[in-house]
Length: 339
Image (cartoon, rainbow, N blue to C red; front, side, top):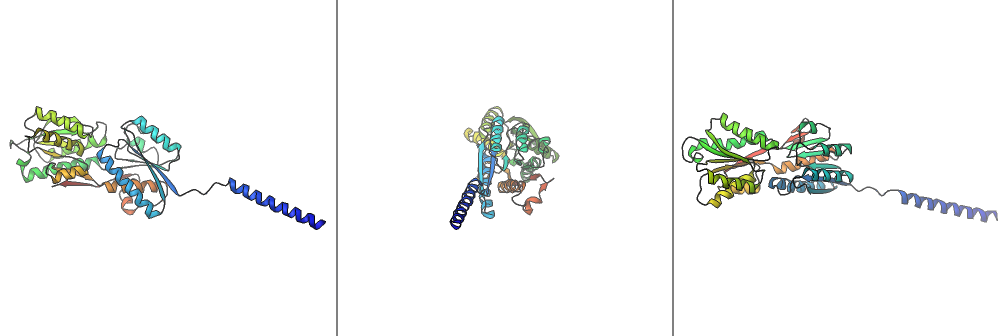
C-alpha cells in the first residue's frame, strides 16, 4: 500500500514538474531575429540627385546584408519638402524602436525637434546632403553628417570655366567683347550648398582674372522646371548671354530645355553640379560644358557604414575611417566632369 502511494506521489510530482516547465517556456519570449531597422528620411523623392543617392543606399544595404549575414529592414519616407511631415516621420520611427535614422533634412535650421526625439531614445542619426547647423550637430556624440563640400564644388566648377576660357576665350566670350556675361541659377536660399557654391565659384573666377559680368540671377530651388522658366524669361530679356552658372544639374538642364525651345540660340555655355546621369549624358551630347560629380556610391557606403558603426554592428572600413573628420563628419569626393 505504501509502495502504491509512493508511486502515485512520484507520478503527481513529475506531472507538476512537466506542467511547470511547459508554463515557464510559454512565458519566455522567442529569440529575437537579427534584424536591423533603418529609417531613411528624404526631404523630397523627386529631387534627382537625392533619388540617385537613395538608389545607391538601397544597393549598398543589400551588399551589407550579404557580407554580414544579417537582415536589414530599410524603410524610406518622403517628407515632400515639409519639415512638420518629417518630424512626424521621425517620431513614428522612434516609437517603433528603429535602430538608426538616416535623415536628409528638409529645413537645416529646424532639425532640433527630430534630434531631441531621437537622442532621447538613444537612437543615432546620420544626416546627409543637407547639413543642420553646428549647434544641432554637436548636441550628442551619436549624430553624424555626410556631405560633399560646397566650397570645393564651387571652386571646381569655376575651374571648368577657367580651363575653357584659357584654352579658347571665344568659346565662352561669344561676341568676343572681352567680357563674359553670365546668369546665375541658385538653389534654396537657406541651403548651405547653394550659398557656398555661389560664393566660391564667383570668387574663384574673380581671383583668376576671368572677366565676368553678372546679368541676372534668381532662386530656382534646385528644380529643372524653375530653371527652365527663369532661363526662358532671361532669353527674352538679354541678347548677349555667354554663360549660365547653376548650383545644380537639374536647374542647368532646365536652362538647356529653354534654349532648345528657343531654336535659334547657340553658343551659351552652361555648368552644373552633382553629376547626375542626365547631366553626364548632356556633357557627352555637347549641351553642358561640365559638372562636378559627387561620388554617389561613396555617399551610400559612408551613410550605411557609419550608421552600422553607430549602433555597434561593425567597425568602420579604413577608407571611411580615414576621412571621418572629428569622428563625426565625412566629406564625399567630388570629381569634375567635362567633355
